Image (cartoon, rainbow, N blue to C red):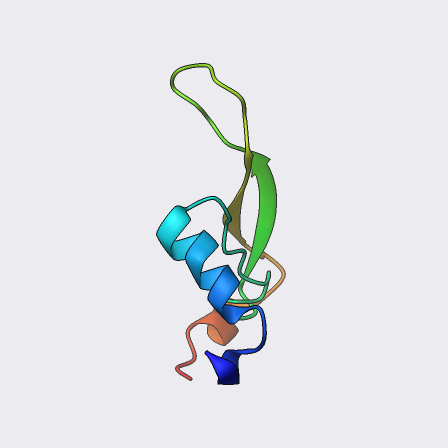
Length: 70
């Protein structure tokens, strides 16, 4: 945990063990072809909505760029 920084232990406990925090990948986490957009979470029971997100294909990035292997 020392290599991951001073907050790594606390982050791990809350994200993985307790589930009371969300891991939020950067918008370019899946390369140049997708971006993260914030959307309200849909709930079945009508409870409180929480922040959520979706990955959306960026139309201005050519298909040839997206199909390249890294």
